[in-house]
Image (cartoon, rainbow, N blue to C red; front, side, top):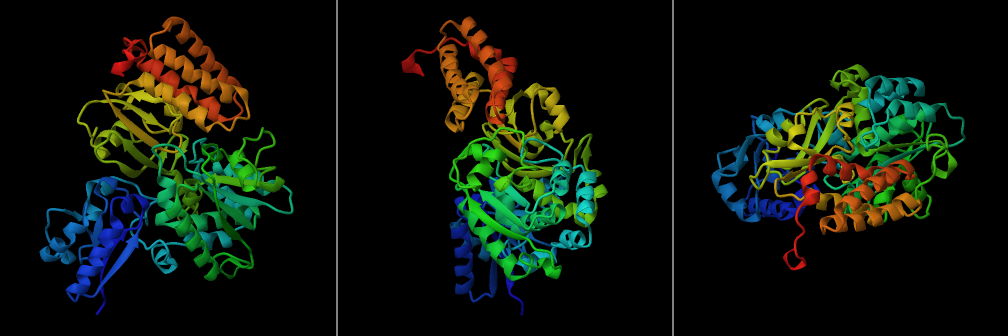
Length: 519
C-alpha cells in the first residue's frame, strides 16, 4: 500500500514560523500511531500568513491546514486530517482557495507542489520541456523566441531580455558567460529566494537555455549570503543536475556543454547592481563599473556576459515550452507576461501573488492583502523596493505596468509592495531613503557617497523644524544632483522616494517639531 503523503514547506519563511518542528511532530505522531506516512518538504505556496501550511493528498486534491503549530499536530490526527476532514485550521482544497484561484501562476506553477530537490518530481510536473525544445533550435531562434515573448528584466530595470541576449549572441568571443543575479537585497522582496528554495531546477533550466542562446558554456549563480537555505538548496540542485546529465559536457546528451557554479556574496546591497556583482565575482570589492562598455559586450572577466535576475531566467523555460505568443498574450502594453508580486509591510495577508501585468495596486493590496493589519486606512504603498516611490491611497487604481507607474513617478522594480497605514510619518520614510543609501553606497561616486549623507542631515533639520524653507529648497537641489550625476541607480534613484513623499505628503515635512524627550 502506498504511504499517505503530507506536505510541509521547507521555505525559509515557513521554517522561521516553525515548519521544521511541525514536520518532525507529524512524522513522530504517525510513527506512534503506526501509520505509513511520508512527509514531503516543499517550497511555499506564498500564503505566508498561513505558514506553516500543511497539505495532505486526498481524492479531491490537496487539502490545506494552517497555520499549524507543533501543539496542533495530535489534534489534527484525531480529527482525521489525513482524509481532509474538517478542523478549525482547515483551509479547504488548495486549488479552490480564493488567494490561489485568482492568480495566473507561470513562474510559480510548481512552487509549493514539488520536492525542490527531486529532478523526477520536476520532470513529472512539466520540467525540462523548454530545454528539450531549445536543444532543437539555433541560438538565434532561441533569442527570437525570448524577444517575441516580450519578457523584460524582472530585477528592476525592465530592459528587454531578448535584446540583451541578442547582443551577447552576436558578440564575437572565445568565451561567454551567463550570470544569475540572485543578490535579492530590496526590502519587501523575496520572490528570488522562493524560486531557489522551491523550484531550483527551473532556474537551472533557464540558465542552460540562456547558455544555448548565447553560446556560453559556463554560468554562475550569485546568491546573497543572507540566504543560507537558498544557497543550500541551489547547491544541492546543481549537484543533482550534474549527476543526471542536465549539466556538464553534454547537456541531456546533446553534445553541447553548460556548467553552473554557485557563488555566495558578502552582504553588500550594491552587488545587486550588475557591474558591482561582476566585480565581486571576479574577487574584487563590489564597486560599480562605469558604462560603456556594457556587460553584454565586456562583462565577466572581460567577456560577453548575460546578466539576468532570477525571475527573468526562471520565466524562460515556460516561454520555450509553451511558445512566445502564449507568454505575450498575458499582460498589457509593453509589459508582457506575469509579475510575481511580493506583498508585505502593514498588511493582513502578506505573501507572493503572481499575476499578469495590468492588475491594479488596489486589487493587490485590498483583495489579496486584505488591507492593513492594523485595521487603519492605507496611507501609502511603496512599490519597487527601498528606492521606489511612495504612492498615496488615491493612486491605488494605477495598473501594475512599467509605463503606467513611470507616468506617475514610480517604478515596478523587483515587484515588491510595502503597505503603510495612516500613522506612518512619510518625512521619516524619506529620511530612511537617504540613510539606506548612505549605508549601502559603494562609495565610488561623490553624488551618491556624499549626497546621501548630506540628505540625512538636511532631513534631520527639516524634521526638527530648523529653517525649513531653506532646507526644503536645499533638499530639492540635492535630489536633482543625485539624479543627474550618480554613476548608477543606487544614487540616481534615492531621490525617487524622497520626492514622492514631498509631493504626496507635504504636511509631514511641516509638522511641529517634537521636543527631544517626546520623540
